[in-house]
Picture 1 (cartoon, rainbow, N blue to C red):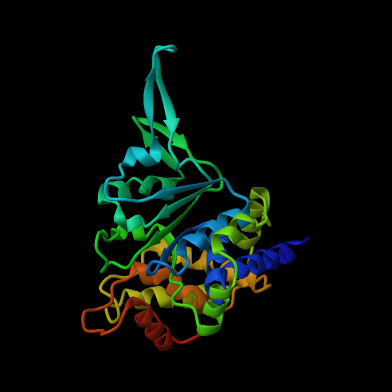
Picture 2 (cartoon, rainbow, N blue to C red):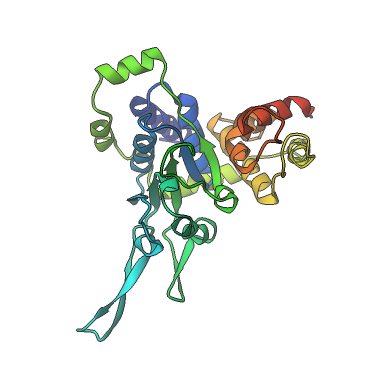
Length: 306
């Protein structure tokens, strides 16, 4: 199969497990093709963990899952050195973070100290334990799920960590037809266990390189800079986007164009990925009366197209 056929087969397989959410599934695939980390935020029971399992299995990546809890320590993620009497030395035992996909389940139930242990891994693709820096596998993705902040036992993720997530998506409740399919169909966990590997890690790296080659014109980049400048104007948000967020937006738009079968980025690609890519990095002004996603969409309508 060529690249387009593999992508379509991947999307089709994911949509058999996560029914009625094709837009969110495509956003997840775009995020991973762009080389970014993914945050799935929603109430319990709507399929966040199932989607993360299905993504890792379909991409054929080495997978590790950590259930984040209040007593989880940083060493539980990165690993520890244990003294072995036979060797008369300390031997490092790597933790679950040494995987190609780390599912950080309910990440906001861990303490800020443990959450911050992921910062170096997500940005530098390495971890430093006991003074020694160790590289992580390639590719390396964090797929994190979190519950809404108003639920008991959660800690808000700091802005510095939110900025490391390329995209944040919400699944939401299924519509009536999709929910009927869930009620009458097979168990989703059993379906995930039976999923076939559609892409190999080598295929994924090749697709990521192709995504980087998608053309973004000067006019398109001007439009993107206008949007970034609008976030910094103080009219919609308390603090604007960083250059890292702008780079993430370009990469996400390239991936969106690639999934649409084009070798160039259109303004519609930026608009399509903008809320998922930047809303979690922004705080609306106090008198906005709406959330960051709605505020991003209102801002887009005020910025003229090229």
